[in-house]
Every structure is written in structure tokens, then in C-alpha cells.
Image 1 (tube, rainbow, N blue to C red):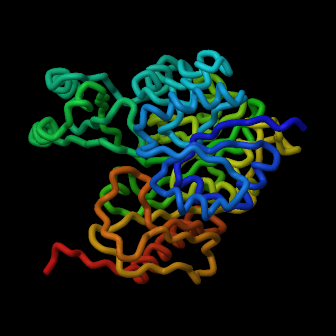
Image 2: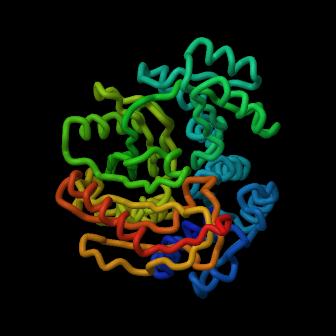
Length: 414
């Protein structure tokens, strides 16, 4: 097989989530140059070892020269594909790819996964429920929406990620406080929505050759905003119930009939389910969920979603069986946010027998503040069980164990 050169935009966190052996397995069939952040250059080189090529950039997420430099590098080296694994890179990978002529209108299609108003308008045009919403670029526009819809409402960046900048407003006092604090560059790129009461669900899917390889639905034990505020986030894989089957069918309809989904795709969907089991669309991303999702799905379905997708996308290497898989293991995921203070100690291993995987990323001696994005957890773990009820019970037990084996000091208290 002829080896070609592809470029992958990938943040350090995702690099570290895969072993050197996993990256070598990819490199052996699909040589890839990795563009990433220079903030952890030494750790990345130590983790990956020899045989890999990198482009390192300071301030990778917001550096405008990433697109310019990668375009010229790809042109000079006859790159055959520009790929990504994180939300921040969806549009810039598409822009580079279109400019190189490797794809056509990829950026235009990608906008449906990044512009929340466009995204939800598309869903609404297919007669699916979305929250009442509006683009807003002034205090008057916000006030008009609230006068029509009432409190509570949610304001968020129209192209936001990781729940950054999302605020729930419950009264006029909170609205005025928000207006006093919002930064001018953010003020003209906002979406306002009616707050939805309901259970939060996250659904992840892998598509290869246009076929669903798996679609996995999990109930979130807390909202993303609760997670940012310091509550532990659990994701409970659902039992095979009518609601579960409804969520799977809903996801497949979005992927196959509504959105411009590529033939090989990773998808992450967030929805709310109200008391009458109605599904209200939240948002859809053309990448996998964050935190420990790749490991969770790997344990549940017996394949590595990211590496499987990369091999298919980079060099058309597919699993022999492309039929939709059912989970071989029922699992749940736990993510523990940092407290505000200095981390004094944290358990590096977990002895609980139902814990399939455990990873502590908190750094002893580091001072932590509240998370700004839903990707700053200090502990991630996967538990296995026979039912969703048992998963929930084991997540609770693990949460208590982590709390008992993690020590903080709050330096503001004397």
C-alpha cells in the first residue's frame, strides 16, 4: 500500500489519551504529521518517542499562523488530507483542506456543526423540537427575547465549545450582572435560548462508509454547567429501553437525513428529555465527546473509536464487520473536577474491583481554580456493571472513594 502524508491537528490532551503503541499502529499504515501546542513539547516527545513528526505552535488554539503555516507545509509536501480530533480544529481543518483543493465546500458543511444558530435552525426545519432561540447582538435584543419567552434563559457564544461562556439567567438582576461582565469581543456573537427542564443525555456514534458502527446513549448525572461549577459528572450507559431505542433512532435520523455528515464520522450529540419523554435537541458535534469517552466506548464496543476512524479516514482501512454493534460490556464514566485550592495528594490507582480504567491527571502541588471548559477534570474512570441502575450505584461509590483519597488545601482560608 502506498503511504501518503496526512496532517492531524490534535491538542496535547488527546495525544496523551492514546499510548505510544496506539500511535505507532496508526503511523505504520497511515503516516501522519501532528500539529499541536508547544506548551507540553517535552512531555509529548517523551510520550511518543521516535518515529513521529510534529509542528509545534505557541497558543495553538488561537494562533492565526497555524492555518497559514499548515497550508504552505501541506502544499510543499503534497499532503493528501487535513484531519482533526477536537472541536477547536473543525473549521480550520476544513478551511485549509478547501484552500488546498483537497475538498470542496467542507467549511460550509462544517459550519452546521459549529454555528449553533445554523445548526438548530437546520434541525427545526425538519420539524424536530429545539429550544426557542435567537441570535442577539445587543442588550435590547436580549430584553425582547426575554419579554417574549420569560426566565430562565441561557446565553452562550454562538460558536462556543466545552460550555465556556454559557450562563443561565433567572431574573433581571442576573441579566444586568451578565451585561456588566460580558467582554466586548463576545458581545456580538451570542445565542439566547429558553432554558429547558429535563434529563441530559449524551450520544456518541461512529460512522464508517456511511454506516453506523455503534450509537451509544448515556444519561448525564449532572449538567455540563454543574460540572463546571464543581460537581462530579457521571455518564450512565442506558439499558435497552423504549427511550434508549428512541434516542438511537433520533441520532441516526440526524446523522443520515438532516446533517451533511461525512461517510466516515465521529459524532457527539447532546439532548434533553422532558417528563413526557420528548427529545429536545441540544447540539451536535462532528467529533467524539470529551473526557474519557473514547476509553468508555472502547471498553463497551471492543474497538478504539478514534483510531478506527483515523485509519478509515486516512487510508481506507476498515473493520471487516461494518454492521452496527451492540455493547459487549455495559459501562459508565466518572469525571471529577478540581476543587479550588492546592492539590496535596491524589490516588494514582484505584483498587475497586468494578473499575475498568482509572486515570488521575491532577498534579500534586498545583493550585487549581474552577474549570472554564468541560475538559479540565483531575480524575477519569470507567466502571462496569450489569444494568444502568448498578452503574449509577457504582459511580456513587467511586465518587466517594475519590473524595476520601484526594486531599486539598484552600489557601484562602487561614
